[in-house]
Length: 400
Image (cartoon, rainbow, N blue to C red; front, side):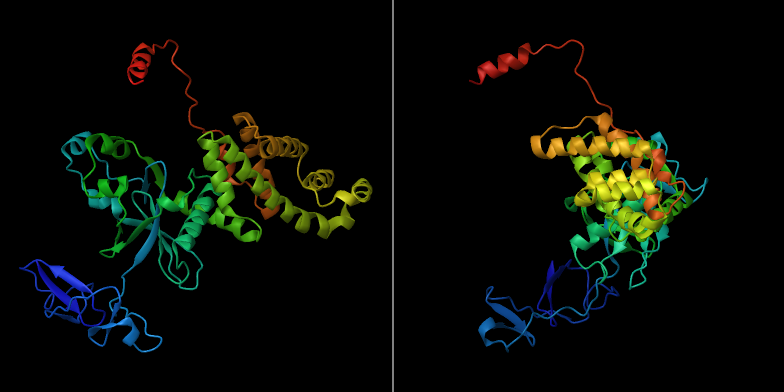
């Protein structure tokens, strides 16, 4: 290995002896390299005008220099779950065979190819990209300058799919993938993952069989239509936070009932505030007399969500069935918050079933595709019919 130093930043690069970075046509290598390497004495030194000097001798306000070589097409990324194959049309699938999987001879590079883009309506004008294997990438640009911003925007995109009827799961911050658009047509991930291993043909046989043989197939048109409907909903309500709906749905699917109720109830409260301001208060004069009488009677408790739900029901802004489900969910949420009582899955499913109605009324949307996502929770495994723990107990005894 031979070392070179960037005269612009002081950074040291190492290359194989048979590779000459000074003559290589590589846009990621600085043009300001030199074979003369000056090692940094210690952390108290900074690079200044081609040499290391002590920080105290640097001009006031001096900051470490930044390389003039740009980071090309950096991205924040998330993977759809479960593992998915996104097809442009009915004939664009890779059709990986069992023999190819066993021999590890499939073309993994095809999995990373970009198959669609999604408009983000950001100041940079850079859209999101979608790869064949279900990676969603957004640019690491001034619109999304930090990991927090990247996770927030990716969850908004995922929630758009959810509202549009596509099963997706929340992206937690520790799951964020760092990557880039590579070779102009593919998404490259620097963060290790199953997707990256499959792309590079590095996955073990047991890991590559199921995703490559039986991926969930999504069509590009299906995803774009779902995204558009979801975006219309999200953009129609300033008080609506996509993260809570997406988190609540994911928790529901995995039967994490306390998290599901907490997150979905936040969504209920946000939707309630929007309905209260936009559909009730602005149109009070048009409601029947019984609504006006109830409003006066409940005037001292108008700040309570239970009161708002009662008046929204009387005004026929949402249905009796929706009101009943919300009332029960509110009681159970209070039991969870004050007494730690975990709700059962039936309550969560019942609450989920009325959310589409609330969202449709609040956003002015008809036929919200999210309705088709009722149910779908992971199987609640029970214990085997017969069990034997003799060896377990014997081992525990021996460890005392």
